[in-house]
Amino acid sequence: MAEHFRDDSVAAVAVRIDAEHTSGLVFDPHQPQLRITDLGAVRGDGIFETMLAVNGTPRKLDAHLARLRRSAGILDIGIPPADSWEAAIGLGLEEYRARGGVPEELAIKLVATRGVEGEPASEDPAFAGTYWATLTPVAESMRTNRGTPLAVTLLDRGYDSTVAERAPWLVLGAKTLSYAVNMAALRHADAHGFDDVIFTTSDGQVLEGPTSTVLIARRGAEGEPPTLITPVLETGILPGTTQGAIFTAAERAGWKLGYGPLTPEDLYAADHLWLLSSVRLAAPVERLDEHRLAVDPELTAVLNSFLDQDLPVNHPLD
Ligand code: PLP
Image: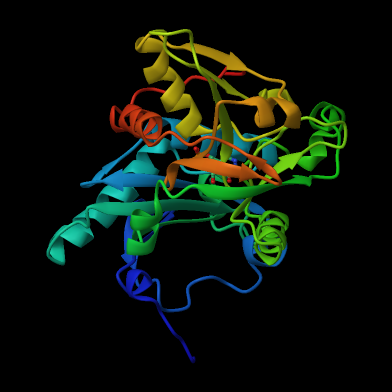
């Protein structure tokens, strides 16, 4: 096979989970592993999570495992118990130690697919699909670009704010492998001179980014902390673990918190706007289409220090 691997992908470690290896088995991610009829590959019929591990400790592990289980429930895919995923991650970290050291930052991706149609991998529904974890060093470019202000465009997601309730078969709110639309939106943004996207509903509500949660801040009165506001989850957006962890820490620090609904006008009028995600962290937005927004590197640093605390995550729908 003609293959070209980037340096960070060469260093990746992969661990699969199956009924015979419920605590994981290290494999070579650069060799073919997946059956080509796997429904994850041919239909995007699967789910995933991506988390950051700093100095060998995965952040928000419980929240990521809980969201994986939630996604699995929405798609009706059986997945191994949390113990198996934790053991697999532990095995991956052990593999790095055996190779000479755990990179300071790793992106850990957990993937579960429905497996091959009609040929379950096990009689046990918890192991009937295909499951693996990859641990990949966070690219240096990602680390150095954190905090660089973004130009973002609003794009219509093509449905209204009530569709999640009306059409549960759209499996909104699950972190599925079907990210082709999200990636197409990012390419569209790039072609028009933007770094990222915020999706809106056809009836004018703010949803989320293709790989991030939206957060705005309204400044408090002199000496008062800011108020943080994020869109409501009822529109079918993903409950963000980064947003959730920031809210937990901000609440402990005495900040006021709110959940939308948010409109584009709310974003234009915000004092600050960020896109939040587990590996990129809090990314400040300085331009939203033709609107300029103020960036505050100190406030961004505070949000990222909240993430360092790695506090439990709660969402209003939990
Ligand atoms: N929304 C979408 C659609 C995402 O793909 C992601 C992360 O990839 C997020 C939000 C942010 O989630 P988290 O903060 O848990 O990484």
